[in-house]
Amino acid sequence: MTSPEEFRPFPAPLDVAELSAKTADLRRLMIEVAHRTGGAYLAQALSGIDLLTAIAYRFARGDGARPDHPDRDRLLLSPGHYALALYVVLADRGYFDRDLLWTFKDDGSPLELATHRGTVPGVEASGGSLGQVLSLGVGMALAARRRGQGHRVFVMMSDGEQDEGQIWEAAASAAHYRLGNLVATIDANGFQVDGPCAQVMDMEPLADKYRAFGWDAIECDGNDMAAVVGAFQALCAPGRQRPGIVIGRTVRGRGISFMEGNPAFHYARLDPGLRDRAMADLEGGTDAV
Amino acid sequence: MTLTTPTQSLLLARPAEAFGPYKQALIALGEARDDVVVLGADLGTSTEIDGFQARFPDRYFNVGAAEQNEIDIAVGMSFEGDIPFVHSFGVFLTRRAYEQVCVQVAMHRANVKLVGVIPGLTSRLGPTHQAIEDLALMRTLPGMTVLDPADATEISQMVPAMAEVDGPVYARMMRREVPVLLDPERYRFRIGQAVPLRSGADVLLVTTGLMLAPVLAAADLLAARGVSAAVLHCPTVKPLDVPAVLDLAATCRAVVTAENHLVAGGLGSSVAEVLGERLPLPLERVGIRDTFAVPGSPEYLFARYGLDAQEVVEAALRAVARRVQA
Image (cartoon, each protein chain N blue to C red):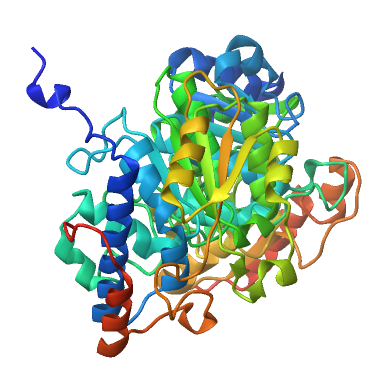
């Protein structure tokens, strides 16, 4: 006899309006965590949260109550410094107790400054060293196909880490093995540690490079939820034979007027005044998070 | 005194030779377990995984000459429950892809088996292909099991044992013509277990991998000179069988290590650490000194860099001369 648990469906996907409200809520939550816990890498968490929200609440099937469900889609975060963005998503989805967020990067807390597999449910990869997680995704996608499993593997990357040569080894192998079950995205906010990507190491045109490697690549405004959803929808069509990638053009610190494009907030500490200004910028949402 | 002991019968009376024992062992493992997958990096025949490929094409993945990607793909597969055996020459798996081995394989205790073919000075392609510090690199990684088999018997038994242990393993692997020294009817390989092959009272010879034959020959030469040598074979370099080393060292009061590797970081260092902490005794290490090697045939290189019976004999005589009586 099959238990009711086995029939429980994954949470329903959100529509564009719901996703937009959700990202506002998640931005608020990140601001609050950064404020209460002494700071966070907010610039990239804010640029990438729309892409991550679209994947986690619409395209990647997953359930915080059953984090090891074999049919879940795998969601892998490559640049570990985006940890806070993933943590607020996972907390909101019930992968762990929301109150754990207030321990972010405390000594002994499982919520480390960079993501580390095995710390909390839902963190499926360790991303502290750049450029490795796309390869893990290729391995997971190959394993899924060999076992006849239908789930997808989503990999979120940054534009700065495209400098790493291993990314292109992985890109070649994903296309070679015709991994239509692998969908990647790049939060292309145009900046890496030492400055603008165009000045530090220009890897553009990224979409042309991935296409030349045998991928289907779609560029879009990565902070426009309707555009993001449209891009992922095209790459998540059934029966695909090629890996797909959404290159989301985004803005650092997106959503907070005084942070957008401001390098001073790469690692942001928010006193009560800044916190209040940031919250005032974040209109909409449901406050449900 | 006679050197015949019960354990000596683990050795064949006459050494033989086998061809491609790894290739056969891997096919046999594929027959026994359907969770074993094989990854290669454009060295299919050279690493003897072509037999597995022919037999189990759906479980064979050639990722091209891209070892970093190869290792992390294997980690992704292991997260899904597969047991990947990852192949290249030892130098490329350990030198070129060290960070991938460290932060993805070792850090996650991933169930990935790294098979580094052509150990030490057995490559003819010179220092780019001679894995002379691979044991050191792998031994320092937390939780990594490190193996260096001596012969075809050991290889045949080691391969299924690697799949049995849950966690990362680095194994050196010999290919093509491989000596057969151990009696497959009597010998039983176990990870973490050292094998006493000869008892003796004056000096303990601790060996791993291809140095087993020269060490056994050295024990004979030493006997002829009135020095009684015990032989302890350590196919598992890590975790070292510390009780076995200490028990035999305590009876001999002098120790010599021998390995197809730098004297730094491998078996010699492991034994030195144990003796230094637990049982300080005269110790000599036979292996490659602080140098890269020139290209050449294995026979030439083993002689040139002192990886032979004569060097073991001389090291043993030096150690015995410094021996401290209890």
